[in-house]
Length: 201
Image 1 (cartoon, helix red, strand yellow):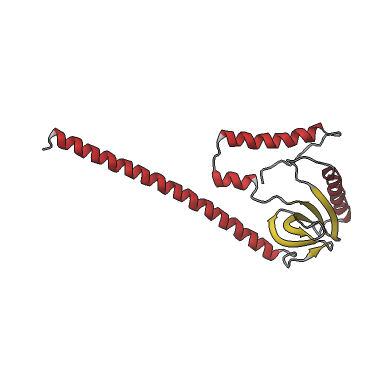
Image 2: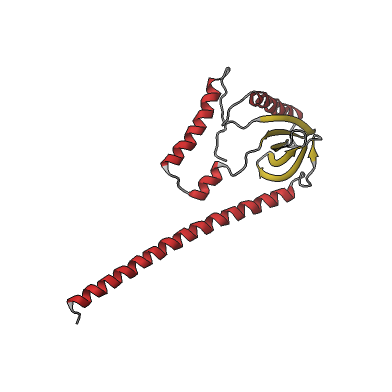
């Protein structure tokens, strides 16, 4: 049988062990989250490398006698974005290579190019710190052309949110304020620009 003193001692020891286990559990949870973020980084980089290996622009060629392609940043449905170095302006840029579907009929290709050139002319005139600058556009061949954009180092918002799962309200408010600032600018210029493809990635 326990004396009252022994009971209190045992109870304190159990509480200390319980707190140590809780701390160990919290530390393990943090380590698991860190490993999950690292895993996501490795998966993303592996996909990027595989896409780069399959790209027709994977040999670090110079486009338009000016833009030295360095590495693939991302790939979408009809386009690839490469980090490049502008040999004339001596700065890093993002070259977005648009590839038309070779099976498209000529009128569909013409319509796609017309739409893209209209967007280029609108984008070229924009000047706001929260809107990526557009520097140049040129044809590569009959089925592809390139738009040259300001290079933004780091990851996109989609990746950031996936890595951090949840963010503090203060940080979320800051992000939303920056997006709203750009949208307000687009709405107030004459004629206003309607952004129909706003996404975090």
